[in-house]
Image (cartoon, rainbow, N blue to C red; front, top):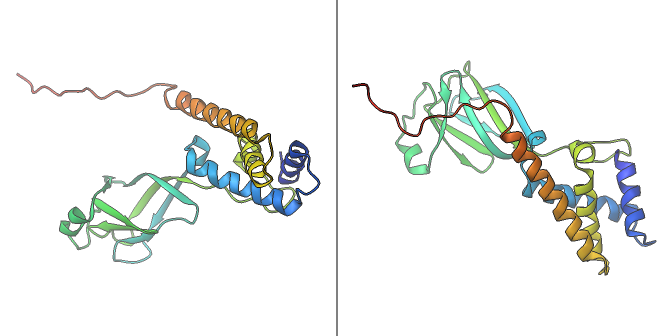
Length: 201
């Protein structure tokens, strides 16, 4: 369903002459923002590889970044630590082992060389809808959650008596997406690490 169709569906659902196109767009955008705060679905997972643009171990996260999954190099995964441990880490160039996040920046120690490739997996926001033909993963894979989230916002704005029904349908859609993600997380072969390791006799 494209952006124009989503707005048409929302206006038909609310069925008010004072629900303008501008308001419909506002509620849809707010609904997407809310979903991206509440959910972590597989289609939100992003993967990028990069080289350091500078030699001080600082990397600015992508603009669509929401939450870290992992950060690693060919030598292994970096450990996210508190500022105390980061300060004690070696402040020179080498294989990065630890990092902290400060605002929109990852700060790594030791500092990776500019030629070293790093890999970042993270949850990212979907592109915002703007043009009538635009789609994103919310309009393709979770349009009911997007629309009923927007309807709940519209119901609150207009003090509509159907607000509770919209809110319930939104939460049902959210829970279905969570259940689907759990099924995906536990489907297929898994490697289970033993709880204890015993030394050889």
